[in-house]
Image (cartoon, rainbow, N blue to C red; front, side, top):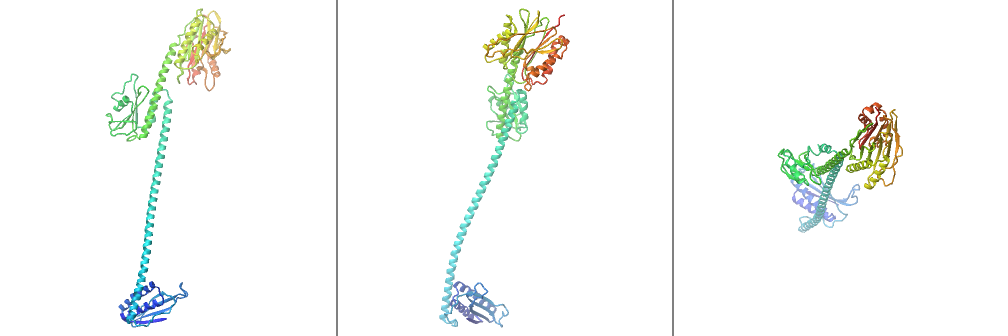
Length: 577
């Protein structure tokens, strides 16, 4: 079906528009597409009337091209072309195609648009189309609103998700920051504990309190302090004088650490004080050196920066407390050592000068540890003219050993007044020590010389054997079977031994501190003593027995750490004349 209209004025345009709408409705064009067709055609017709001339509108119903996706469906073609005499002649035609089912028109397409009935029907049809379009638009608007609401909710969900992700990211960053902080704090704590352990080991390794005071600043500067001043009170308990900060005086008086600065330090366990008048710009931390009685002194430190980290301050205070304990122990050790050494030397006898017998003794206290007080020597005359020479060693050290040594010395002199051989004297000392101090033991060797007897009698109880040098330079060790240690829970009778001593002979009595070394035992040391004693000529021993004693000590103690007492007693039988 093909319809053609010539359009020259607005009436022709209206009739063409109405007819097109009716034909589109008759051919079953959907309302929305029909409304679009009529609206588009009306707009194009207005343009044509504006340009003027005659225009031709052609409507053709048919089927779609087989080549198109909609092949086989009904379509309605509308073509608006200018006539040859129109002002727009030569312009391209306006075309539009709308789908429609195959249908036979139910209206008279040739009816005049001027007929009122036709016009009314056209208007009503247009209204119906408009109503349908509006309904469709309403549906679309509802659908748009629905999608807009969905989009809004989706946006809100996305915003909420972003907020959750942001919160999760923030929480993760905070967790990472907390972990880094915890790791840093743990590393700092480990570093402080390691330093505290190492520094404590350094301070407690020495028993010289002067050495401890010297090492303390070396440990703290420069990491934990820029300067360290250690002030020790004297024995009378005087406190710091005017040359020391006022905070140090307060620390000494109260026993609490004090912080002197322009601003509070906020350090745990530390009292704040005004800045020091000696240097107001420098913060000071004054820490007392506590003991069970009273502070030993005050340590004054200045911070490595503007102020101390609280944890570093706690660590420094703890190190100072440990240094105080180390200093206190060192002072007590030195005090006890001095007492023991003084008592030991006071109890060592002045050697007699019997005719025909030269005596030379050496006693050297241990230089390491409190190992003094156990070794002793003695020489005295008996009523019958004999001379007793003895060297002993009490187990244990310190004051108790020194006191026990003095008791043994006194008991031996008392027993020797009644006479008796060395073996008999040692047996009585064994009984005396076992009953007096059951948990204390001793070793001893006794030699007895008599001017009318060419033999020397000796006995030993758990002691290193005497070494005898004959006038011809030969040296022998008197290692006949000795008795057991004095004081052990065993009844024993210690035997005497005799050896002939010609004039010019020298007997060496000694303690194990002279010959024993931990790495090599005692036998090599005894051999070295015999070698040293045999290296002297007869004239040297006769002329200078004291110098000979020193000559023996020098080579034997060259490799000694002196962690035990050393005692040596030389007995030289002078040549007659």
